[in-house]
Amino acid sequence: MQAIQITRAGVIGLSFLALASCTEGSGKGKTSFQSQYATARNALEKGDFDSANRMYLRLAPEAGALQPRVRLELSHSYLRSGNFKAAAAEAGKLAQSQSGAGRAAALSVQATADHELGIAALADGDAKAGKTHLMQAEQALTELLASNPEFDPLGSLAGRRATIAARLKGMP
Image 1 (tube, rainbow, N blue to C red):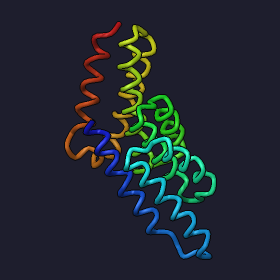
Image 2 (cartoon, helix red, strand yellow):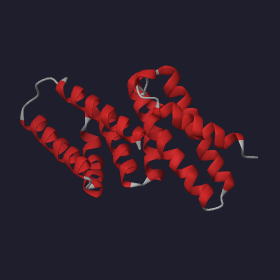
Image 3 (spheres, rainbow, N blue to C red):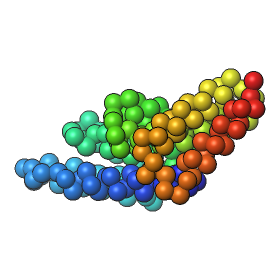
Image 4 (cartoon, rainbow, N blue to C red):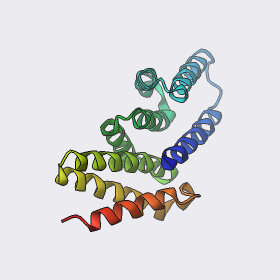
């Protein structure tokens, strides 16, 4: 849960930074995008994930330089709604196309989603899928913590990685 809160804080901060760095446009398009983005963001924060997901999906193709941010927030919305499969897929694709802090943020969402998918698969008796998801989560967290330790100021991601590593160690 702490990882989700840390991820949420990072997404919010980077989102505002990205929007604040926009240059003045023609006015109407910029206002329309900002208005739609604000509506999607509010839906996410209020827990209306279906609306947030629809709005982010609609915004992504027209987001231009902000598309990675919109896709990160979409993956975060999937994560918060419990759609871990969609969150892992979207964040994983995003991580492949990003570097630096953008990649680290996507890896954080991907790792959290893969961890949850692994736990669910193991609970359903699917040890192979469970192990695969746990290994993907551990790999994403390892990279994230090595490249961007500032994403884990309280140690919750390192704790999640240690929990996953211990669980994997006990698996055949």
